[in-house]
Each structure stands twice: as C-alpha cells, then as structure tokens.
Length: 169
Length: 161
Image 1 (cartoon, rainbow over the protein chains, first blue to last red):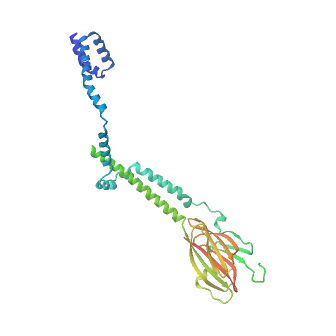
Image 2: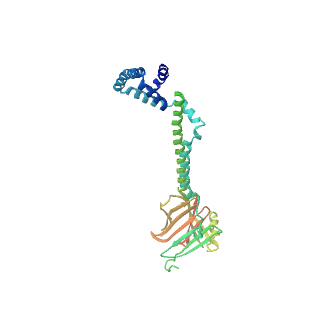
Image 3: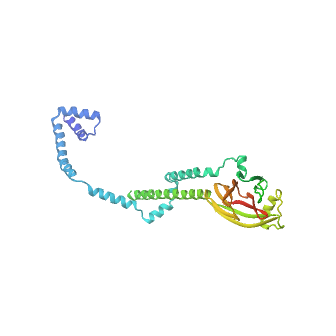
C-alpha cells in the first residue's frame, strides 16, 4: 500500500494540475477512493491553491490596467514614427520593390492605363469612308463640288457662287 | 527582438508610402497621356485670293497652285493671311476670312493622328456651306468659291500634331 501511495503521489500533482492522461487519471481516482492519506494530500493542495488565489483575484478585480494600455499606446506611437536614418534605409532597401504589396497597386495602375489608353492606341481598321478627308458637305444656297486626290493628300471643296445679277450655278 | 519588430514596422510603413508614390506616379503618367491625346490641335489656316488678274503666284502657295491647277485655271494666287489656331475639342472658333466671309471651325474629334473638324462658311452671317472633314498630318482641305473682287477666296486648312 505504501508503495502504491508513493507511486500515486508522483501522479497526484499532475492530477491536481489536470495534466494526467485518461489512464493515469483513472488510476489516481481508483486509488483515492481507497486511500485517506492521499485524499488528505489532495485536499491540502486545494486549500493551498485557494489560499494563494483569493488575494490575487481580488487584486486583479480592483486593477483596471489603464496604465498598461497607456504604455502600450505610447509604444505604438513611438514605433510608428521611424527615424530619418531608418526612412532612408527603407527607401533604398532592395527588398521593398520585390514585395507583393508594391506590385499589386502597380499592376492595378498599369491595367488602368491600358483601359484608358487602348481605345486611343488601337484604332479600328478604317473603312473607305473613314479614309476620305471629306465626310459630308452641305449647302442650301449653292452648288458644291468635292474633289479628293488620294495621291496628293488633298481634298477640294468648291462652292459655286454666282456673281452679282447672275443665278448660282 | 524588439528592434527587429521595429524595423519590420518601419519597412511596412515605408512600403505603404512607396506604394502610394508609385500609384500616384503612374496615375500622373496616365493623366499626361490622356491629356496629350485629347488636347488641343494646332490648325493652320491660309486665306488665299485666286484670280485671273495678273500672273503672280506667291511662292508660299506653290502647293495650292499645284493642287488646284488641274481643276481651275487661275493665274494669280495671293496669300491674304496665314495663321495657326489652337483648337480645343468642341469649342467653335470664328475667323473673319475676308470682306463679309467668315468661317466657324470646330474640332469635333481627335484621335491619335487624325483630327475631325466641322467647318461652316458664312457670308454676311448666313451659312453658305457646312462640311465635316478629317485631317491627318500632311493632308489639306481647300475650300474655295466665295467671290472676292474678280477672283475667289480659297481657305486652305491643315492640322498639325
């Protein structure tokens, strides 16, 4: 029995801290049902923990930890303002252009340029009408002649205006 | 450990700033590109008097004489005015050509190497001609006919990109 107590005693602390395996727990619980000495040892452990815990719990309840948060916030603010040496190092650091975070907006901006520029860069194949210089001519008062010379890159629009006293031709 | 964390945070902040600078730079380039593409077009306008009075051809009008020679037999070409107008899209510009004849020219569209114009010729404020033309670099449109003395007025219009 004594041998059993000594072997259980080693497990008793683990059992108390809930660190035992299922088999170990069953073993300890079986032993505790039969052994008053070990029951007393376990009880004394529980009392000791209760004695230690109660003042700590009370102190924690009273404490708001405001000063801890203030200190953390101050530390964050300090870290967010890098020194000029660190800024320069970061600017010239080779690592940053290769980071994915840089490329995502760069690629987005490039796509934006393509979206804006592509209608201007890639013209549709011009039709015969689009190749001509004169699209339309209209005159309600006079006759008009249109002559286009593709070779000379010139278009002539001639308005036949009548001289005074003569009807327009 | 704290120093490493601090450096990482610094790099992160600087990385964010670098992202902003890159995006801003690219956007500025895009805006420049678009504004250049959709900007103003320099338009050359020559006002010419063609007649059969005399036989003088202004040396600056050789091209016009060569282009019109096969169609009309004017013997004299006189340059009355040569000016460049900077046209913005959809903003009509009115120019007095000569003695009661004026033209209203509007840049209606501009592509990479093509400008589209609407041109209205007015005599004493009344429209006598309305036309729409597309000009590429090197192309010219000659609008002629309005009487002027014993000859006619010719407007030579070309675009400069």
